[in-house]
Length: 215
Image (cartoon, one colour):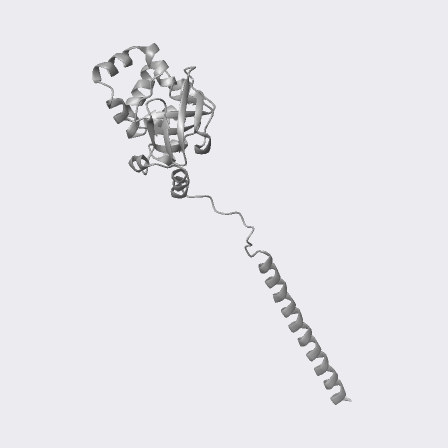
């Protein structure tokens, strides 16, 4: 009788041990499943772009040999200019110091910065240097004439390169014609060459040119 009781006790103990083992295995499976549910998937949000990646993005859409002269960092870089309104963006660019002086003298900084969308042909310092110093000084002193000249370089709306060729009405009220295609354009009767094009600013697209346009 005692032997029979011991065998029943041992069997019960074995069943209990087996139950505990199965329960433990089940718990581990549940933890593994929970871990799998939390594993990253391909749909996870991508990391935000770094400043260098943003800069490459702004630079990637520009064209022209003159773009090599634009600073690679700072407010005057493509990245810096892309976040500032056009007059402020130009003021940070070392290629456009004379243009910025002229815009300031004409009182057009707020007008250009406050516009919703513009296309700007921006003459470099070398472009202004082609004008005899005496004549340039006289123009800078004549606000009405200076304003007419500068607004002759500005078109309402932002023109992409594929839309650039053709006649366009300027903010001066006259017309300017652009010839060319792809990455090669000439502007106005002066045939000013676009040396760095499709430069983004916060409210304008800029095409840097090598010659001053006259109304």
